[in-house]
Image (cartoon, rainbow, N blue to C red; front, side, top):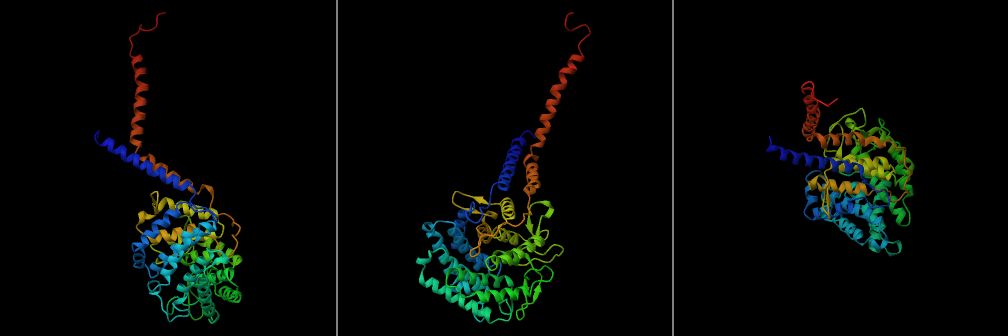
Length: 433
């Protein structure tokens, strides 16, 4: 036992250090709002670019159908967000990297999973996200010095997207043959609003008709945009789910801020939870309903989708909900196992770079078209961290308890022995009269 005790104390010290680090990650700011650079994201993007060069996009594609696309798109969009927070003279790196990501999306590899026979070509998912990044590239450039070819390409692609919506009886266009998800059309419509903010406006009527069609086809159970719809009519085919809602709330603020606020409050009320009382997280299905996970949501633990939780961070920040965004970011920094070097940061020890892409994009979220909205009423209180901090304290001291008990016994023994000795002294021995 004496031989094992030093090793045991080393383990106790390591566990205490881990618990202390966890407490720091819970307490230190992990977001920076719409204007400042969020902590650690610059190093995270350095890691991501290296991972993409090493084939992280191909690895993500093996996990879900849009893996390669999302890995590059989110990297490019996070670079745009990073650049928009910098002075114009310091945007060179952000612009170069965003252009690199856009070129990857426009390559044969970027278009491969999608059908050229759809309207618009390659489907609304592909066109919406690609066009949003095109607009981001333009937004990084001063209005009087934008690349004419990039501006013309953005205008041309926007016209094709707008014509597809104008010619559709449903507000929701196909992403794949015979299949439509409202989130994809929301991104595409947001790109038209971005067009009208950067170039001479032309899509106000298209956006207004889209919003009218959406309001007529809300999920009756939640009052939110449904997860999946009938392609021909746009009628809800599946209840609202968090994997799509978290993205819808990120983009809807740039389409119609008032409608977006109404939808966000509904989403927050029906999907944000505190499983086991430990921090905020986001359920895949609304409260009172359970269902299976899939490639988008990932495995569901206590009904919670980790991917939707990460993306909701960005939705909350776009809505000015700093309390929820900050709590989700701190909780992610605790359970996401970030590994830091002076040059890089990677979550989950770098095993899933696609997760880093979603998180970096979420931490840099803010409206691109609309003004930053006023904060909604807060639902996350300052004391949400207390159960987690208590658990970390318990973990930090658990292995020290045997030593603490031994120390307490020794002190008790040393205080009792002298009294016993005095009681045994012979009669008559003591202080002289």
